[in-house]
Image (tube, rainbow over all chains, first blue to last red; front, side, top):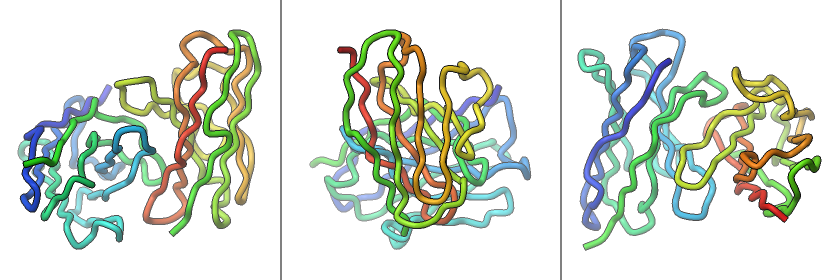
Length: 118
Length: 107
């Protein structure tokens, strides 16, 4: 059973860059069968898809965040990462990494709360 | 972008009841509609994909139907562990989008 685990700072200052890493165990990020996605959820709201990466390195981002988002893959560490620049309080949320079966997300990490505050 | 709208936003029911949650897409998404269950403090869990296909390990009291723009999630014989928030999600086009959620509460 594949497992995903998010890691990174829980507090980021406004205008700075949010960086999170997802470590995958029990499976390989190099598998051609899946994409790997980041999804966030502000408190009390529905999830918002941020973007995804394929094993080839091809990415697909939500246009609402595209100018600020970079998702990358590190196959040597079996990890993928999220960078979100110029953060504001509106970026405060629980951030999830997930295995993406093209049309749906079948495995999720437990989530990482990131608060944007000075 | 495709918008997903769920109704109702909240629902009260009792153990043993049958409930239905509706999800509407702003445009035709064929049958590429998925349902997730989220308990407090937990990640969403995939219940149903492609409108009606039950994810492995999900009890058969959960079922889904619909096509095009209108979809339903039905839970028969509610169990205590089913009281949670449910989200629909379209897999038809990018960006992927979720509904705002339906909170199922104990009456």
